[in-house]
Structures are given as structure tokens and as C-alpha cells.
Length: 72
Image (cartoon, rainbow, N blue to C red; front, top):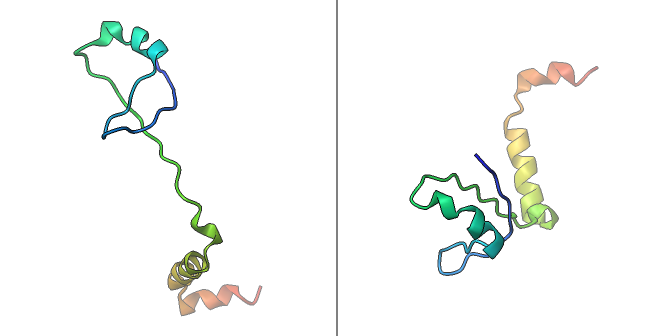
């Protein structure tokens, strides 16, 4: 199996395959292929609401019984 990686843009819910890679896939028509899509996430870490939510979720997992570790 060969693997290819390329950047493209979603257009009308389709991902165009660049010309050089189309030639590599010619023998694969009607065959099963594996597609991996990675989408950059927006950077929420700069937003105060996000920072508050992260701290709230982190502390939600803290139990009173964990306080024995605070003295060390």
C-alpha cells in the first residue's frame, strides 16, 4: 500500500485530489482506499471563557481526599 499526503480545500463537500496524486491512484479506481483528514482547530486558549472552562473541568476531578498530597 502506498501512502500520500497533500493539502487541499473542501469544496462542495468534496476534497479535490491534486493532479500528481491522481496519476498515482489511477490503478486504484473502484478499490477501497483509506482517507485521513486532519483539520486545524481554532486556538481557543487565548479566550478567557476557554481558560475558565479548562480550570473548572480540571478542578472538578479534585476530591477532598486528594488534599493529603497538598502538604508535601
